[in-house]
Image 1 (cartoon, rainbow, N blue to C red):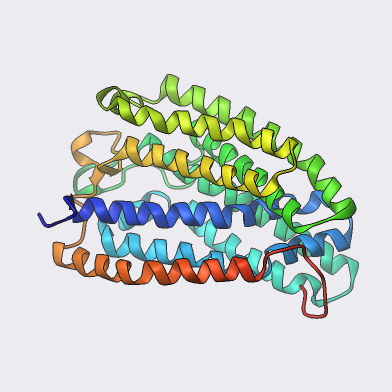
Image 2: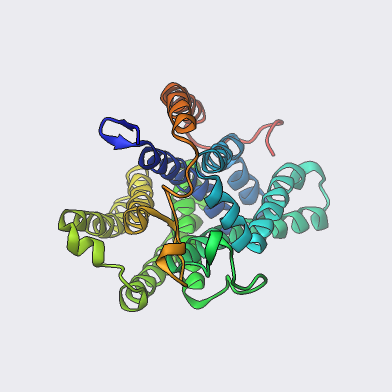
Length: 345
């Protein structure tokens, strides 16, 4: 098996896909979180400002989803096919909600009628909230595993089996961290009475996150089989949960000091460390089988050919600096408080 810097190609591609989806969760997470607060903002002007805070960024942030999905399909086609079979309903809902969310952003301010704006406000709020929740539900199901048999054939239920208790807990935890990050981001982009309102909402969001995170963590450690085995084998990786806990504790401290830019960084680090924990816990498995470990989808039995992975890794080395430069330019250009004008949503 071919390697680069001593790491085999499937493992490198595993890291690439993980990095792409981590970038998506962090950057698009505060977009979804901002939308999940939408109906809690009472005035039409406040809602317009909140939408325009993410206006120049939301469609660019979705690039991470497109590239991540393409990278997953190209690098691990077996995992891509099996995942869609097992999670068909939530993924179809996810795509439908993405379309509705985009339509709400574009159409909400196209007309002045109250009923028109209220309708799109509800659609925008519901779509953002459910997207954040469904992303967590999918992650919860992956952590638990799927009923996979020979040839990675999915034997589980189709319609509502994905709504199991653990997946629901992970769903609420994911939504809560998105809402926390969304409120922090909006505080960086607003001022005046809206800023004060968001400060109040952020406190509620942090309480929601801490409670849901504590419950989910306790359930994971108690009922998820073998979740601590790898940490016992490689104790050095205990640094990941410690760093995640320190990041969680640091966000309220920074918010109390009104250091919102630092708080946003640490809320992003929470997601990064938690996703690293997931990646470490699963590796080299992509989709665990609850029927038998031999039926699990791994980075080795699901990967494309060595030649394909090598070519794609070369493309990553060229494209990654370009993508990073583009996003640095984008966020620097649209830095600062929101000011509405004739071109605003």
